[in-house]
Amino acid sequence: MKTSQVWRLGMGDMQILPVARHRPPSKRPTWIIVLVSMVSLFLVCAYIYPPQSRNACYVFSSRGCQVLTDWLPPAPTRELTDEEIASRVVIREILSASLTPTKNAKIAFMFLTPGPLPFEKLWDKFFSGHEDRFSVYVHASKEKPVHVSRYFVNQDIRSDQVIWGKISMIDAERRLLANALRDPDNQHFVLLSDSCVPLYKFDYIYNYLMFTNISYVDRFYDPGPHGNGRYSEHMLPEVEMKDFSKGAQWFSMKRQHAVMVLADSLYYSKFRDYCKPGLDGKNCIADEHYLPTYFHMVDPGGIANWSVTHVDWSERKWHPKLYRSQDVTYDLLRNITSIDLSIHVTSDEKKEVQVQPCLWNGITRPCYLFARKFHKETIDDLLQLFSNYTAL
Image (cartoon, rainbow, N blue to C red; front, top):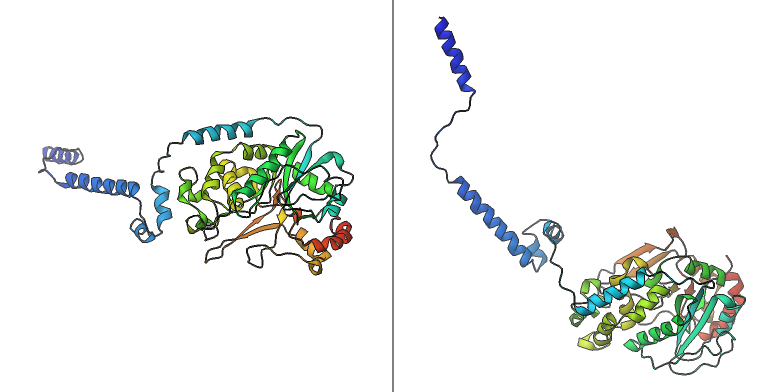
């Protein structure tokens, strides 16, 4: 009995010990290797030759191409051209350079006009008493103005012809910036038209622009025919369609950005050569695309993505609404100054409305400091209303 019991305990112990067993060769590891190889090859092909249509994307995921790009490795970065390397070095140096201290920081008001400035009397009232805090520059492309305000006398710069929609508009802007940059006290640069008027008194506008570290360059992404539909592949490789942007030309920029505009030749040449009305059957307007695209590529965090100049595009025409005498009321001007949201609408079938708050140093503030387009007949109405609508 004792011998039998010992034998049973021994058998139990043996059952819990690993025992080497001889099995016939299995083919499963070979099939696993083949399967993994096929999947790997499939993924490599998908990476090298990505799907060209949205339907093909659903082979990979029921959620489409976006999910595919999330888990595929990033595309290799292309090698930069010599011109791009040089441009990036210059931009980096400009942005990292310390600004020259100035005891008398000024705003440069740059007027881009075909001829006379019908609102000089209004601007004279705006500038009066602040002579040491601003400069005036006038680029008159067709007719030299006869000035009625002392602040505009002898402030005309050498001007060339400007044709709407062509690179000559950008050339005029750069010419104004070059002249304004000659004065080291000019720290902020505002581009204005002959139909622009101020919406606030000088002190408010001065503080708004001088005590922030961004430039007010308008920019948004428009996939429609009046946005990306104007893009030309001749701009490759430096300017890709994903970076091609749109915005109003009326900017307000800090000194570093003004220097960057003058220093740029690479991206300027792309728009000079391949963004013009009628090229390849497209109607590309250089002044609507060059600066928005340029700053989106080189310093996207340095711009506000809206302009401080209000324009009414509600009529959906080639040019914005022109305010006549009957339109100019206290309510109109106060309504414009109460706007604190920047709104863009795409030109595609979706007509997507893009809305962003106007933040000044992180605080919601009114978007607009200036407004256009006002007909010259409104000068008396504006002079009469100026003290009321600019009061804060």
